[in-house]
Length: 127
Image (cartoon, rainbow, N blue to C red; front, side, top):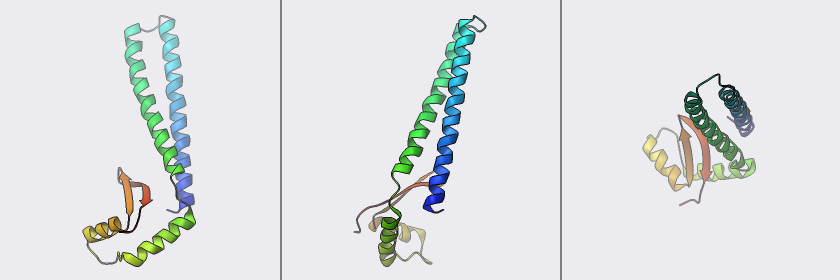
């Protein structure tokens, strides 16, 4: 996945999270109206509100994380230059994963994975 595709994917993720947040807020408003009108029990409304608040907090964290991924993207030219430097020091072909991992770590590359997906790559100093 290229950087433009990654940006597009994260922007789509942000849009989906924003829609999810709006839906949760709408449910909270509807629940408050039902409780105020006496249609549902106050305790039931409290429990449901607490669950919705947790969902809203999770969506807020997901939104912040997605926005962070966008702001931490390196400059494409810098990334290319850095990858070329690393390629001079790290041969990935036909080598055991542990050796490649150790070489990448020495090269200052950190790959962050969440739920089997790369979410961030950082470049430190060559060691």
